[in-house]
Amino acid sequence: MTVKARASGKGGRELPPLVIDYPGDRLAGVDEVGRGPLVGPVVAAAVILDPARSIAGLADSKALTARRREALALEIRDRALAFAVAEASAAEVDALNIYHATHLAMRRAIDALVPAAEYLLVDGNRLPGHHVPGQAVVKGDARHPAIAAASILAKVARDAGMVALDARYPDYGFARHKGYPTREHLAALERLGPLPDHRRSFGPVKRQLALF
Image (cartoon, one colour):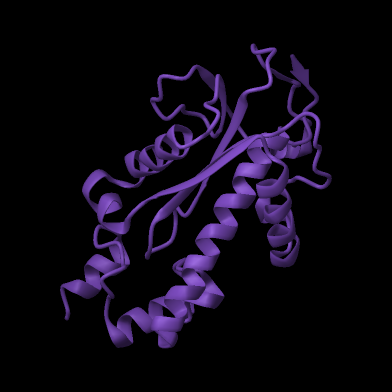
């Protein structure tokens, strides 16, 4: 199966067509959100789209407005053949490192699919070490709709978690910066100190822990 690339590489050059060595319908797109934030889990999603129930407008979640992502997430949950969202906690990020925690969250999402996936398309340049065969796809969330759908579900789920955390700790601004190390977040971290939800192995948090 060959899918025409919809993403551009460096210099604006179109990436080569995506060749998929799997002809069936139980292909799962897999993506994650939350490698860079200082707080909360890394969230992964896996989605098997239904060829009989197409979803218009699937794209890299970062290229969509929050309202559009939320609308598409509802469509994905309604129309996909299977979907799952999973996470690795901040404590697991600290224990394993962000790379291995990301792959743990991906494996959990893949394992939760019903029906199970027969082939994986994983955003990035590494597979997560799952027994299901597949391929890593650089810029995959812009090159295949199943990966785009996974990126949308993961982004919506993690953002919702940050909004909930903001309700518990409104002085940190989590609803605005979603846990990323923005100037606002770093200032709150310096002023108020780390929360139990912060990733203690990340530099800015580690430095503040030494002071509090």
